[in-house]
Image (cartoon, rainbow, N blue to C red; front, side, top):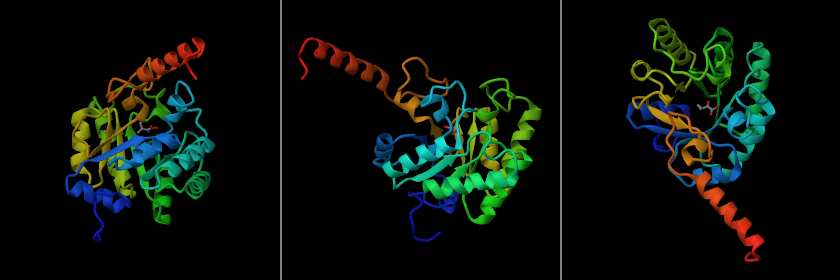
Length: 266
Ligand code: KIV
């Protein structure tokens, strides 16, 4: 480490140093300019432009339809709103699974067009590990993601806690180690059984960023619309609503409608 504070995460080494110092890491997803501006004025450490945008922005029932172009579009916008934050772009389904050279071509496109500081990949199968390995060797930071990986939710039997059975537990421990060995600077643990999430976090030197995986990981990530309470109809069980923008927004829109119709506004 240089004299740069670990409080300001800018490089992969800072994340690892943060874990060493036992300082927890906060991450949120973001998809648009104005909310990115809000985040830029907080102490939140990093922003993930997640492929969750397929659900919470585009209204699909999974992340599978998200295109590379969607990630590029939203990451560029978020970068403009939060130039001061560590920015991670999520590689969407089908953009890296077919072969190494296509995975790399797509990764380099996101890097060059968005000005992000890291890419995130779901899973730890051999082909994904090869893409991650090449990117890390080329000098670009990569975040892993295991547990419930939404791009494979159908094969996993839906959005359910992972790692309850011994066999699955061993697989997740192995995947975490492989991702660390291949050079990831952090790993998202999504819906991982909480004792297992703790064990993975203890075994790794790189930080684990949990979502729905208990409070013993090295940091947390939430989908920003869940924490802001943007969806009037649905909040995932693991999320906490820190406010209720849906209620405020609907009330404001109703007030506007009434005032227009009663010639109160303008
Ligand atoms: O796409 C996403 O938002 C994610 C987080 C939930 C980790 O992958």
